[in-house]
Amino acid sequence: MSKIDKANRLQIANTGLDAVDVAILAALDANARLPVSELARMVGMSAPGVADRVRRLEESGVIRGFTLDVDTRMLGYPIRALVRIRPLPGKLHVVEKLIQETPQFIECDKITGDDPFLARLVVHSIEEMDDVLEALSEYAVTSTAVIKGTSVKRRMPPL
Image (cartoon, rainbow, N blue to C red; front, top):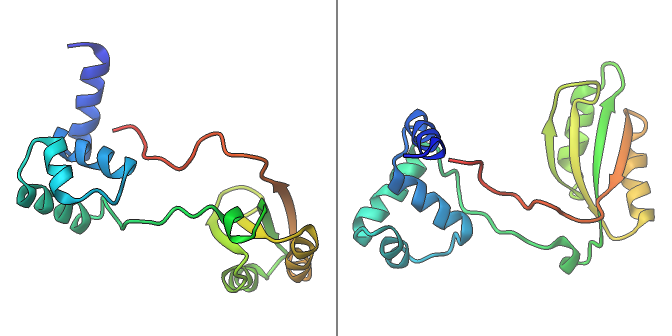
């Protein structure tokens, strides 16, 4: 057994997942719409057995849900940006609420460092981006980077 195989087995052991769970997760990561019968064929189990495995992965919190990957550009939002947001003193909760209520912010993480929020913004135009950021300017300082492309799409970590 190679060092990589041993490391992979150790990682699986530390997560409580077995090789079948990992195979199920990898298959669902590639295509979350796989029918259970196809998933069962891929991992060499019965459909009821795989359905039970998926249910247990959901109940344990490993699988939190199945998502839809939408290209926002195809919905008329050609400009995507990452915005670092630093609330002014005493305005943290106001800024967080504004972010939550602004539909152009499609995702936001609380992070460490000087800027407690890192948000993903989609807009129709630069003017719309200015309007959205202007609405925050009374309560926060922002730093914006327009996204040119994606080198790595969202994926699972190594198992």
